[in-house]
Length: 112
Image (cartoon, rainbow, N blue to C red; front, side):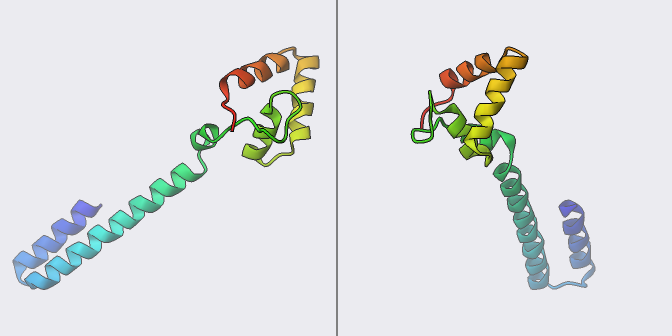
């Protein structure tokens, strides 16, 4: 942990093994490396997370048959829009809820 490393540096400084300048330099290096690790962790966690992709979901204005839901899903997921259309048709015919999900997405997903 960072606190343990700084505590160890402080002990070395108190014992006379490190000068004031060396202590400050080592402490700054530890703190800067900790900030870099935190920045990398937060950027990788937010980049591919489901919540970020969900917030980026928009109905397409160009790739649409009815409302652009499948075009928007295609853009957000990287899967072709015809595959999404097929999925909605199959879920509607087999389970009956594909049309309901499509209508909810049409209502709640904003247009680009």
